[in-house]
Structure formats: C-alpha cells, structure tokens
Length: 382
Image (cartoon, rainbow, N blue to C red; front, side, top):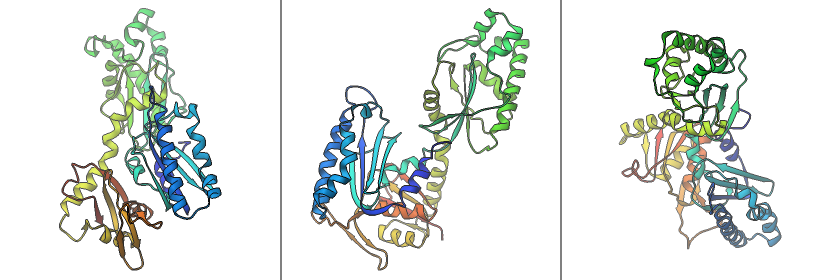
C-alpha cells in the first residue's frame, strides 16, 4: 500500500536512540462533546514531562525546544476534531512523529533514551492487509485495506456494475427488484425464488469479475471480504476461484458507503484470521510450560533475548516494570516511584524491542489469559 504498515513504522521506531526520547500516549474521543478532552490530557502530560526533564538536568531552553510542537497540538482545535481511537506522539530533538491509532491506549508518557513501544504492540496483530470486493448495483470496486487505510485497486477488465448486465436483459423494474439501494438493503425473496435464467446471468457476470480480480490478487495469503446484498453472496461463492475469499460477507449494498466505512465494517470479519498466529503461539507456549524453553522471570528473559533466543514474548496487558538492566553483567534492578533514576526504563518494553529486533514475535495478552502466568512469558527458540 502507499502508506507504511504499523509493523514497518514500529520497526523504524525501535531504531531511534537519543537523549532524550519523549513518548506520549493519549486517550482520545473520536466524536461528541469530549473531543477536546485529549488536549487536556496532553497538557497534563506535558507538565509531567517538563518536570522530568528538569529533574534530569536539561536546561529550560532545551525543554522548550523539545516540547514546542507538542504544545502546538494542544491549541489546535481542528486536530482534536479528527482523531481515531488513540494518539501517540514521539519526539527527539531531530524527529517528530504523530500517530493516530485505531486502538484505545492508556494516557501515559516516557522519557528514556528509546521510544516507548509497549502500548503499540497490539497493532502487530491488528495490522494485517485484507482485500475488499464491493459488488454494487451502481459500481463494482476492489480495495486493499488495513484497519485504518484503504486504497482503491485498478482492475483491468472489471465490469463496472450490476447495471451493466441488467441493461442487456432486464427492464428497469427488474433492475430495482434485484439491485436494491442504500446501505443494508436486502432482497427479501432470497435466491431460492430467483428465476433460473436470472441466476445464470448473474453467474456469468460474476465469472467475469472473478477472472479480472484473480489476475490482480495473486497473493492468496491476503484474505478477501465480499460486500454485497445477501442473496448475491452464495451465487458469487459458487463460481469464484478465489481461495482467499472469506466465508462470511459484509451484508448490505455497498454503493452508498465510503471505502473507509466499508473497511471498518469488514474488519470484524477478518480479525480472527489475523489472530491465528497469536493463538497458535500461545498454545505452543502452554504445551511447553515447565520445560526449559519457557521462561517467566524477566531477568532470565532479558538475558535470553540479548542472545536472540526468544522466539515469542507474551506480555500482560497494561503492565509495566521500571528499572535498569545491565546487558553485560545480567544485573537487573527494579525501581519504584520514590527510587526512580534518570537511567530507568520500562523493562518489558526493552524485552519487546529486542525481541522484535531479533526477528521474534511479541503479543499482548489479556488478564484472564495470563492469570496464572505472571506478567511476562517467553517461548525460546532452543
């Protein structure tokens, strides 16, 4: 796609090293009277970061320079009216990034020599590509989607719309009978009541669509979602050669829906598809619990990840552990709020970053799943 995936963006983020790296995560509202609440929360975070930087010995001129673009967002009313589920801001003296997130995040900040990536980790599961084929009466469209990004694909030979075939055979009355209009409209008669000749015509039309789409969608690992009125879906499934077509379809006429809305509505249909590697990895970890390939001690996990041994890291949602870790000696020191030092880091974040850098996978697990496993668990390669 034209925009980078979150996986690619996170991979870029973990390479940044500077003193300091400022990370802001803000809970925001997409609409309604509380859209400006995010600016209030960000203002509070800015005050905390100012205090932290001053404690760490930075001059006021340096602090003002670092926080200038962050403060500008607080006063930008239009910015807060166009948000997603969460907001992440990353700042060094030489870099400034604004991420609008498709997931809710806890409001928090970090001042370290690396960017905080832990709150972003759920995106590694919910960042897959999927395709969406919209079969409408007015037009036929094909999109490549992520959860928050949609790109129209150019398909040579793709029939323009259902109107094309009905113009050849049917009167305007029949066109209205089968096409419907408006999002969510359904032909209540069902395919069982369709004339056999009408069904054959649709099958012919769908084969033309299938041939054109198959020539473009050559990667069968990317799932395909069909959007159409209900009675058309089983007919398309009968003729398609697209093995990546998902069994469930997005119900309703797609004609009046914007691409972004279609992608958002289709996301629940592909969510479980993208969660399969996570579920498989967790099952493998549970099967090996008690063996030398599964670690639950963060000190041992950090030692293993430093040598590239961690295949999969599981972290409990919302948990963090602050302290210091000396990779050379393997010494780990935990710290609390009263004993915080400027060199303190989020140790779970450190483990996640190094796991990703070494080609491993990191998954955030809910409280119930990890109830008996502590806050972190690592499955080793050997």
